[in-house]
Image (cartoon, rainbow, N blue to C red):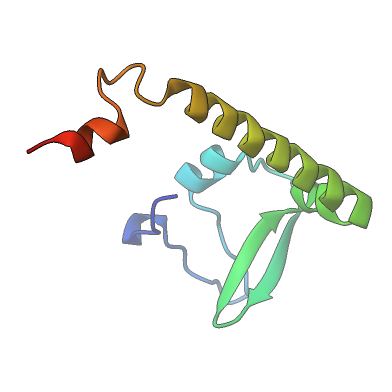
Length: 99
């Protein structure tokens, strides 16, 4: 994720209202009428579209996300083991047999 530059900054009005910069609204799918949640995060504030936080509120949903991530990692590891040396034209052992 790219850092926030000055063009992505917004001023707070006298009514404590903030306008979401267009580039960020487009990137994160924020549209007029959407609700956003302001979450304290240490010295910062996270702004999260409300619909996106509900998927991980329950313990079951978090476990399902964890299980899916674990399966993706296993698939990546299995794929990497099969490809070692096959596309490069050399193996790790070739590095140690030199000179």
